[in-house]
Image (cartoon, rainbow, N blue to C red; front, side):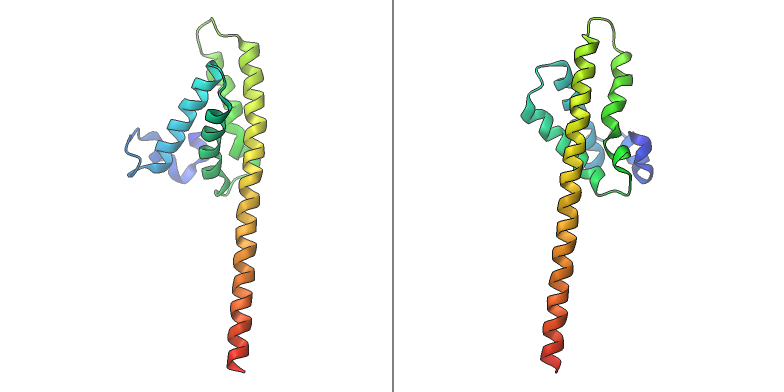
Length: 137
């Protein structure tokens, strides 16, 4: 996941726990830890949604393809395969699939919000320009 944050890679590699000096790294690390915990536990949907939301919102505003933005969830499979025996791999892989779909839905919601905000701002500027033009006439 760090590789997909080209400009922020150094900040993400630095394990600075201070959320004020390195908020992106802090948020991503905290959220990924929460997702991993939920994958192995009871999959509390509120906790999963909150963790996904934090990471996906950061990635939705960046210049990357949707597959890159949510691909970090699929990368959890490689972490999963490095774990010692004792995990139900089928169950965890099914959970990863559900997380990937949820991350994509969240990404699309964020992108829609961004586009709506841009449209609203463009409409506001158009109204402002029109009013200023009428006042000058």
